[in-house]
Length: 214
Image: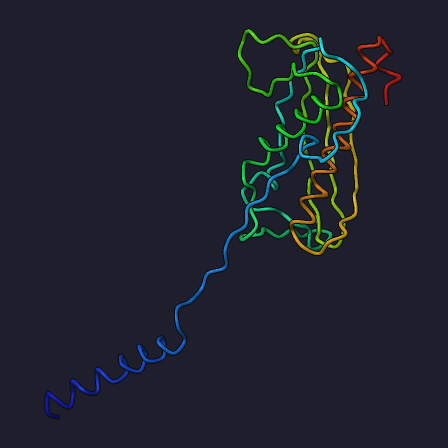
């Protein structure tokens, strides 16, 4: 076989491959969308506070997130024992940090106080109440429901004494069929949790017996 003919045979498949790629055109990757939880500060009309505790200092955190949720990807439920990581729908900031931020902003609004710090705070920071949260479930399904399950604890001055520990089990329906609608409902679920905690702090400040606080 002549060298020129051999060279032609080798080059033909390469030419066909380049021709095929040219016909297909450049591939377009799907853009990743980033989402954040929103607080009552983002509401067009801020709700009335449940208490006026301007002189009360509140520390929020640590907020601990279950391992299955503590990742950049937004997690959705696809079955009773199955979850899905949304590669193209991710949190704009770490979920624990975003959750703590929204909880702190909500408590500031609901208790009418600006004396709110997010963990970790400076050693010199004084707190009348410290709120910690252990989130075991914070998952949803577009067109389905959002579930928020968490243990939350209120400690006394500078976190020295546990005053109250409760379990939240919240479910909210998602009216839309996309991630944006689901994240909006997740923000509302954090609001509901914030209201539970705000009412408890209000009762503790009033001197109520922790055993009687729901």
